[in-house]
Image (cartoon, rainbow, N blue to C red; front, side, top):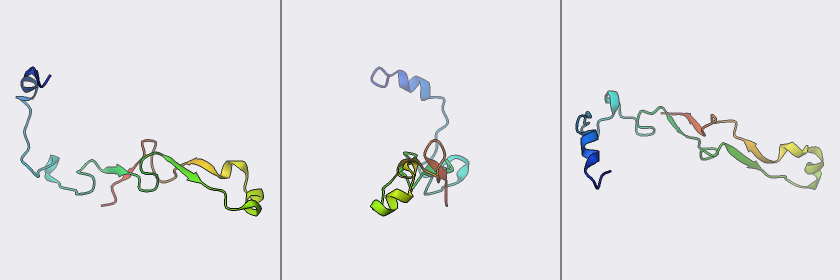
Length: 84
């Protein structure tokens, strides 16, 4: 589309923003005013791997307590609210 010049026709009537200005004039460095950032615990994958410690503890822990688990900190998209 860009090579054919058709993209220019689509964006010619769009509002242009000045450099450094984000929607509504806010400039959050962390999220760019999206209000969400990738989870720092799971890096956005929504899964955390729990390792088994040793054989004694392995007997105490049920099978579902180690391996891949759902991250408790983020939402289903792997995002958390912007901490800033």
